[in-house]
Image 1 (cartoon, each protein chain N blue to C red):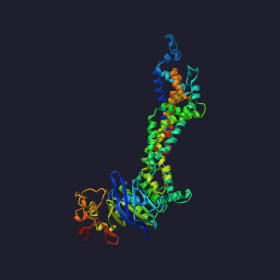
Image 2: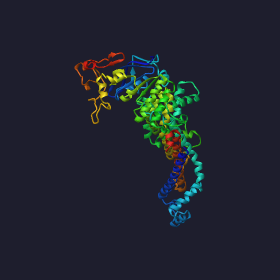
Image 3: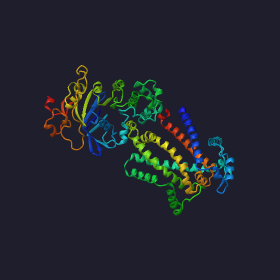
Image 4: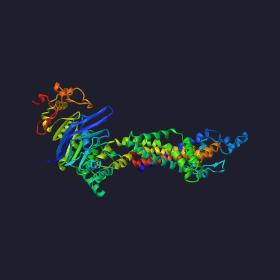
Length: 325
Length: 305
């Protein structure tokens, strides 16, 4: 399989009044053609900032560095803004969490779809319009041609997210980054949008990075999973492995939070992870999960814990023997 | 869109009628017109005579309807001071005031839009602080005083612009700056905060994720959204400018309707004062209507309301 995106040693720092927040620390991953990688973790774990760093769209207070950032064989590090703008929306597209606010209220969706195409292709606007109609039909919007003249406020949340997906596909990208694409939608619409993303990804053989906190979404969509906690990847592996045999105490804690019909009796308390996430400001050392971990041992605080390889593509950031036995 | 325009138009007409009524009543309450017309040394018989001759003895509502219907037909009465139709007097003067108001508005927008945008994309830099400083000074300085300062610098010391009068475009430069500068801070601060809010919005991130270049993101996607509240404010400000031009026109002896109003109040020339108040409020209502339409053109969500 051809690698679409390869990231090694990515760090993202945010400058806050309280100090420098090390939002992403030494994150490495890769995505193949036609593959779905899911970045999972709770709010603030750095999964969205990882994606924004790849797109070079970090907020003003943020900056990133990496050892390697290669997209379709092209080194993204050191690309100037103009060079990066040629990649964005062209070979690499992003879909955001909030379909209600992610479209400009002042322009028709046709205008906003076509402009994505016209930015990267030197074609007449008629061709861009045809492409927009084709893709709106592809994402399951009926009467596509007349929809082009509608404004975002005339569409429902689910339709807008379909428009956002169509917009991402305008230039035929090799990689789609979807940041919580269904979080703001009704459950029934969620399933439709996920199925649509999955089908389109297979049809166009795109790499997909799916960012979510929802393990149900991961189970349905992901080929591989990277679990993030406090800016670090704490466990990676094939989705099936992670679900069947979670290793890291944090991953296990997440799994315990899910009610499974048959396993969990009505009225039975679901699992929860005690304690709160530390704020990664200042000198970080040791395991960042140690204060909440039932397997805590003095070694955990003393040294920085590296990802330990358990097999091909499978690794966990934990030194407890109980975990790795 | 057509429904929206008709609705707004109906509303504007209703406001216009209400405003004309209030302005008529207020001016009648400010003094007895018969006494004002008769002059200081008139006897009580003369005052009574004038009262019946001009119909001031009729009920107020009848007087209003009489005046209002004539005004709607374009007859604003006759000035007892000039012995000329009020319409003609205003016609001679309104051009000066409208020119001044339009120039001042354009001046204010030309200064404040680039400054507001720059302050928004470079917040908390020396540029932002300079713009803020200019805004605070502009807001704090009374326009008659600023006008006098400009006269001292440019007309008295540098001698490059005339002190007063309304004969050539050069006479309009200092009044335009005086009147326009007063409106600049509000535009600039509104645009700055609006622009900053818009720039941090999700759809700007979407536009950048599409690979659009910065100027296009800024001017196509951000400015159009940020300028909507500025349009509403501009209508209100232009209204204020026309009213506020009473001060500026007096300082620079520009013969506009502001100056005329000031003179007419001194001469107790009530039909003229009455007509000016009516005219300014009608312009104000019209501008508000215009800004509603303009906003609807800019923002499709407004058209639905």
